[in-house]
Image 1 (cartoon, one colour):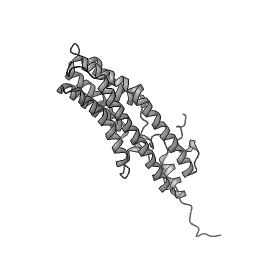
Image 2: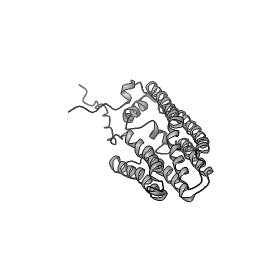
Image 3: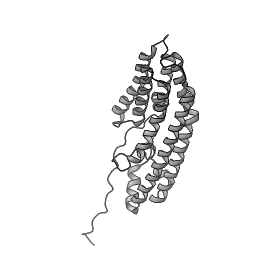
Image 4: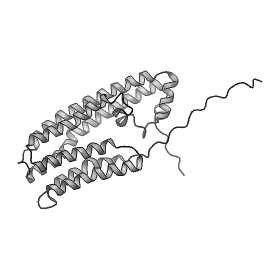
Length: 247
């Protein structure tokens, strides 16, 4: 008997993943509720523009803080929601021309689109937060399978492809947002009509811009998963975390 045989290598345990985020709560706190506040509560007969802005800002800020404490990670969408609400409300308080609302509507998605490929070589690429998310995918198992098959370069190429698809999607979204804002927000700066139009813009952006953009993101995610199946040799179900065992 060969007593010198070394034991097979033991795969290190997967790092604990952060708790699952509630997608609907994220959507409500970062998009829906701030839009409702800016539309309904910023009128002079209610909170007024200044306090309406404070309340609208407090929602994504409170959610982002809560999410940071709970999951120990920065919430990209909470930061985007906070910045977007701050700029929108700030422009309203400064009573600037409606042109600047259109610039803001276009600038935010375009900046995100620019950041996606620029962060590819950083420790936390934005494409991973949007698509290759450790809350959903078993990134530990996927990474081990990629390394074992020598397909890490193929994975990096797949991430680059997904990054450019997402970047193009956000750029198109920015262009559409600009023309929508120019068409809808026409009231006098600082007026209640302008505030209501800003809120209306939030609602119209969903069916005309946000939902098509989410459809493209789902297509990119589908292609990413199919690519991972080929690169790792794992079945589609094995790419995701196993559901928790029932007690």
